[in-house]
Image (cartoon, rainbow, N blue to C red; front, side):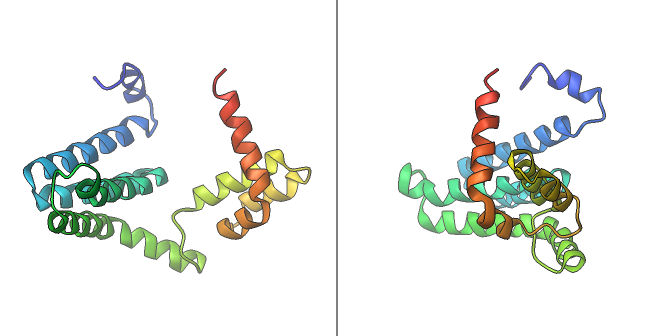
Length: 173
């Protein structure tokens, strides 16, 4: 078992159990792919990371971590060559794009700009609203159709970092 609380999650209508399964599957496939020098397993890790992204927006980080691991491996650990690393990176990204691109294209068509998911922009904007003296404006923006994530962060980066630091400090309680 990975964590005892997974038994409780599996009995609930929550996405944690399925998402954790996909994360573990991605890691397993990536490690197996590197160990066996199998581009097919790396491609499967990319497919699974695409499914994890569709399952929960946070899954967008999985291919980034796997690609970083594959690209840095020859330089840091020297366990595999640059040619395998390049093929593996391409395979991982190809698998991810194959699964995730229809949703990413849909988001582009629906919103008019490229985005990872509306949830990320809404969450960041809502958190800025919690820390701002003009919270009503930010919370309303969080639920609007268009949440300009990068513009919001450029405009209120200090406020967002302050809120993130407070949330991080409170997480120890």
